[in-house]
Length: 302
Ligand code: R5P
Image: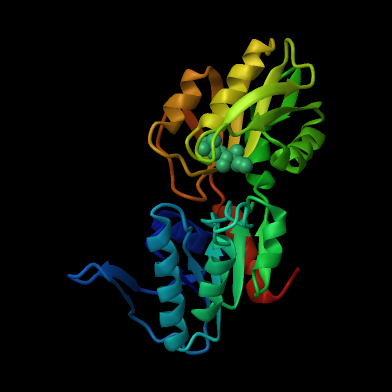
């Protein structure tokens, strides 16, 4: 039997996924003891069950990650035959390597925590870097969100479209979109002026985007600076209009306003982290993508 546990990270997404793949949602309590420690309780025997825990590990990242580990441990203790963690947004994914001495490899450590807690397999959507795939010592299903996002972009009917990667790391993703949308590709040369990773600066537009409808494609937006500063650079370089697509709406306070104020005409994202309710952003759900993944994993099909 396929059972889904809705973690505290995104219950609405877990419910949507369960509805789409016809799996049972087992009753799960995630609360807090008086001293602030997390209290988890699965109110059902999971003996022999194929269990899927839906829990993105976005902010508050440490709580969501540890709660996922606690739920996995509880599921194992309740007799689950196999535990799969579905973390459509995987926090700490940007900290995949030691960029400077003295820094942790946070993504690797997060993966080890989950294995130790009893997670047998991990399902994620668009990790920050494909190189991170090797950081997990358990089977990983790494999905891209193209099937969810592409129809929405197509529905915009943008003519004279150019797809733009806001940095070198996003080139492969942007290339994929450019190919599917039969549009040329441009890029932004982005440098970070300080050691603070939350400060980005778009310095140069690579490619001719004069008179074009530019679609910035990024894996996530956090402070919104990467997209906002890319948009400014594109407009200064003569773009007709700038639109933005980001898979994960990590969005720190003020991010959407920053992007909007930079003249970005349309924004498109998914509900991997949370469901945003903001008239400036169009949101498509990854629930069908995740439901399909669960169906395939539980039946063993490819
Ligand atoms: C960076 O390499 C990522 O792909 C994103 O561009 C970045 O994390 C976005 O962050 P922010 O919105 O804070 O500029």
